[in-house]
Image (cartoon, rainbow, N blue to C red; front, side, top):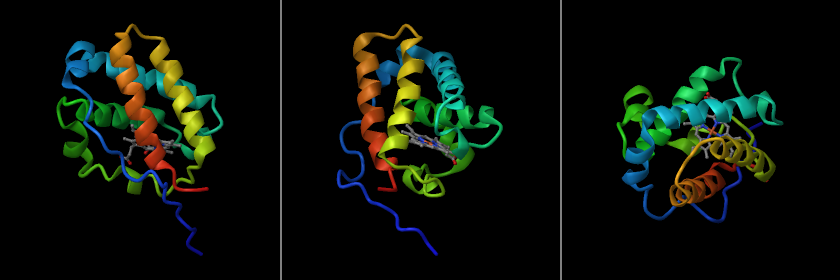
Amino acid sequence: MEREIYIPESGPPQGPPLSKEIFLEMGEEKIRLICDKFYENVKVSEIISMYPEDLNFSAEKLADFLIQVMGGPSYFIKKHGPPRMRARHFPFIIDEKARRVWLSCFKKALSEFEIKENHKSEIWNFLETFSAWMVNSK
Ligand code: HEM
């Protein structure tokens, strides 16, 4: 039977995209390193069972997406087509708890890099909002 997909009341993420200044300041290399760190954290977290064995490709896809969202090159679209991120997450049962774990893995990764405070908080706000829209289960 098809499972019931939960639609968050907050709806799709609104608001302006991340400032390109963040991308220019951080550069592609650092964003990729943060995503690698993020997946090292995922590896020892409660949500690891959702992920494929090879996390390198997952890290590459996440970095490609974030770079694009930050106004860098459109790597994600070029490699994988339209983002449709919520739909891409439908195969996984993502509830608020899984979202919290995901965010904490990212927060830990971010904390290990030197990033301007205002940039860090802009990235964090984006991830908090965006991740809420990935939730598809009560
Ligand atoms: C809310 C908690 C989240 C959970 C539990 C989750 C879980 C997952 C899982 C299990 C995959 C499949 C792994 C793979 O395809 O390599 C995936 C893919 C992906 N996730 Fe998430 N995710 C969450 C939030 C997010 C957020 C906030 C973003 C972006 C800011 C994001 C970006 C991506 C991208 C770009 C992919 C690859 C999509 C594809 O090409 O198929 N995810 N996620």
